[in-house]
Amino acid sequence: MSADGHRIGSAEDDALRAVLDTPAHIRPRGALANTLSFASNIYVDPATMPAWLQGFVRINPVALLVTAIRGLMNGKVTLAQLGWAVFAPAVIATVCAPLTMWLYRRKR
Image (tube, rainbow, N blue to C red; front, side, top):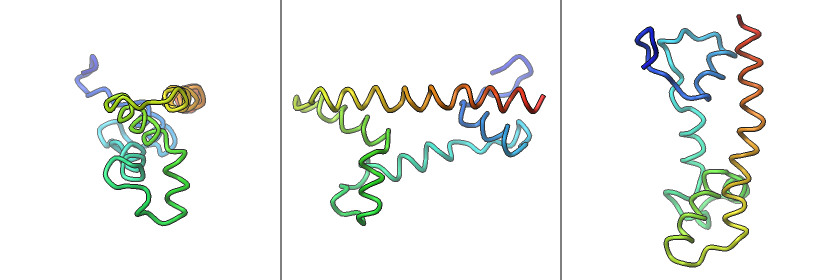
């Protein structure tokens, strides 16, 4: 909770509010996170997906993380899987954090 009693949201929510000029009490809660999780290998084997969606799953940061975690759990993780699981979210944070701050400052 913030000092004014509102629940503190994610950076994704803040970025969407900055772009969409949405009031703080109306939160586009988890739109990106839900999309990334449903378009990943969490729920369904990518082999059963259409080719265009399989291509997206291969580069989806959530799917990369899930693949690395599954590899760690069954003892068959590769260094590449661990590297991508760390690298992809770091790139997203490196791009999105300054963009969010720029959008936030521009609105004020």
